[in-house]
Length: 301
Image 1 (cartoon, rainbow, N blue to C red):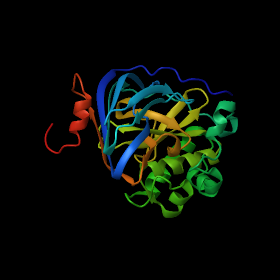
Image 2: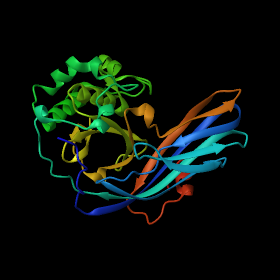
Image 3: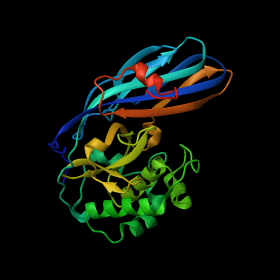
Image 4: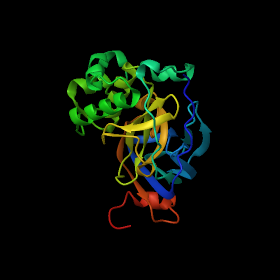
């Protein structure tokens, strides 16, 4: 049984705009800053992107390319000396507000092609072997794909408390299981590890919650042999959400492959993220980079 692309989800299309902005500060002058940004909405059955603008202060030289998994990447290299970097992105995307009808299939009948194998094995932050016993316990004896995913997602939602500051971007799925705490990234990583341990290909998703913005969000997708990649969110305890609830930016084996912003800089000093925030607009005709920059300023907009 080979996984096929899921058919389009029919339903009402909801156009929305989004804005993201981040500010980085440095203890000494930076003479070169090279960043890779994954802040452009991706295309799938749930959403249709309609453009993304990215800018930085100071400005830099920008190229756009698509990586091996189909993610849109903006690379910006800045050579003007600076001690502060602001990254702003805005985009428009049409979201499908209906969920697909998904049939269940037995785990014993699952078979995937070679393209799915990297989403079954260990990645930098997700080692299925480290959570095998817990994965079988969380699945609670389920023998079908959808029941297994549902049981694992609910177990994480009920047993891993959402706690800021308890983990870092380098925390592994095994460490999350041991501490039973973390943020959406950590809950997604544990879900990836558990599903892979049960023979279900799973990948990490970075994006936004449309009705609870303020920061980026993380969830996962699992591979259905007929419908293709389908979403599940351990943080919210949901499987097969409606497209209008999420904006997807990028997918990878775990967070280390798809952070919203990554890169390097040349300086005698150190750097740190000062703040990052996002907002989704359902009632705007246009959102500009200036609107994204305004998110850094307190007060009404």
